[in-house]
Length: 365
Image (cartoon, rainbow, N blue to C red; front, side, top):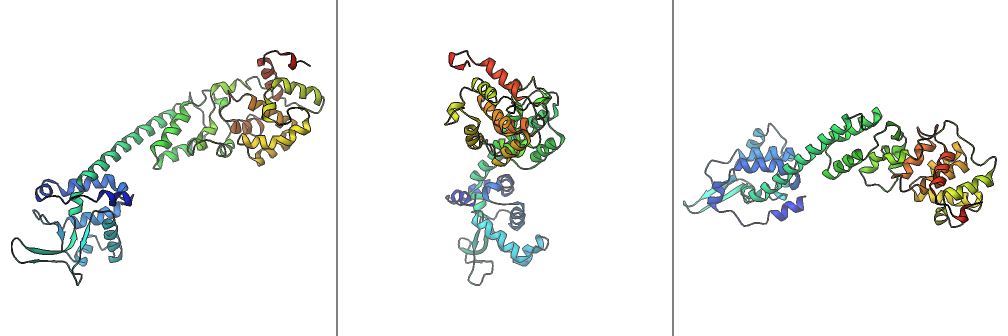
């Protein structure tokens, strides 16, 4: 930012008439809004405002001759070291120049009405940069208005509880996020995530899915929020869930494996060995899970809780339904370890996938 300010500071000196036409305080007010573009903070503006108060009306040179002691009194006792640092940073931003005498004192030596030497803080760069400062201030005001509009839209979306469902803790996190200074891009992505979220409370993924969503290939802002939201089409996948969680492979593993082949015919594209045996499937599922954004720790925990066959079947079925599941990693967590795990039925999911497949001779047993 400061390099930008220094580049902007390379400009021709303003004429006497243009300096007279420009109001110091009008430029200062613009700088107050554009301070971030110049790498400045409120404390720098306080120092600059104090210096401006020493300029006599009608003095075209805009040189401050006051001593440090006098200036510090006007700054309510600010320590000299801090004052010198502020002045140095204002000079670095291209808004102040130091005209130092040989002994470091500030004064004006006048030989005639036309000839004078002035030593002190030269504030004329502030006026010379009036136009760039005004442009930067206008851009910042537009950004602030855009941010305010986005915040209002997001708050309205959060208040509409009939269309979006969030846990109290998650909503609190989002409201805390909105209270901080955020970029237009981050707010836009959050608003888009909320606008595309489910209209059914049952489609809200559990709190634990948040951490998993952060590991997916989402953008920096989306990954913080969209793990809790899914489009309504995803609900079709497990809307007929059962409270019974069948052991998918303990009774008839060969029959179930054949059912898996019929329900997930594209799995052979993901598994180099296809769906020949459970052992060969298990050897490849961890890598397949990582491709879907599922961490090894989460997948191992799901296997421990649900069994390797049911966990692997769930993963393959989710990938088979990729056109309807926007965030497979968060969805996997929800149906294996999250709030949906108790009612999710892998067998019913496979039945629906099988019914959706076209009938081909190679799919029959």
